[in-house]
Image 1 (tube, rainbow, N blue to C red):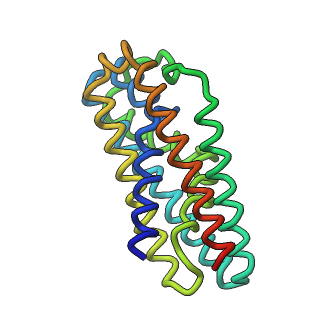
Image 2: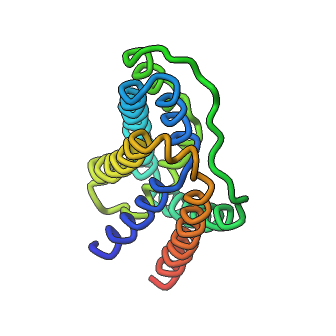
Image 3: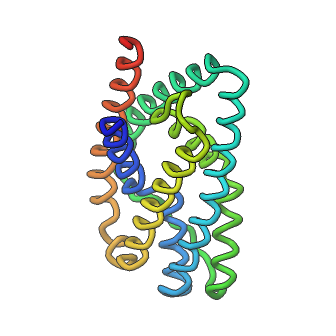
Amino acid sequence: MSTSFTAFLLAAVALAATPGPGMAYVVARTAAGGRAEGLASCLGTALGGMLHVVAAALGLSLIVAQSALAFSLVKYLGAAWLVYLGIRLLLRQDRAPATEAVAAQGARRALLEGIVVEALNVKTALFFLAFLPQFVSAGEPLGLRLVLLGSICVGLNTLADVIAVFMADRWLRSGAVHARRLHRLSGVTLLGLGAYLALARRSA
């Protein structure tokens, strides 16, 4: 259990620290409306992310109730997805995530928009469905554990976004350097983790 949780934390931290669309969104919101608007958008994306966590927990629990074999298949596909994601990060061009020009609209509007943007993000839903099952087994109390792991992911992502908000000016100037290092570190971590999970199950 402790080994699995350590692997989970390594992957979750690597993913949270990697610059991506979510981080670019909160940085752009900060540039447009200041720190308060940027922090409000972080809270909004966190709430939207939790909607995906709950949906993933309910969906995966239903899969287990229907078939333990189907859940095992989901886990193998998820491990393969981690390997693919790691390779894609290693091959990614060295550039900072693009930040769209947005207009200032107030903290309350930024909060609501953040919720909607993240709640409608299909990639976030697919991420939780593929990622979370890697660190649970069908015999465990699945729903609560998935919510716990998903909440940790959302918390780490939000922490990274908040740091990006406070460092927005520096990030926009030197983002390419940070992106290159984080993409490589995250790629190696995910590639190794996906291979480890797949081989560990094969030998079990």
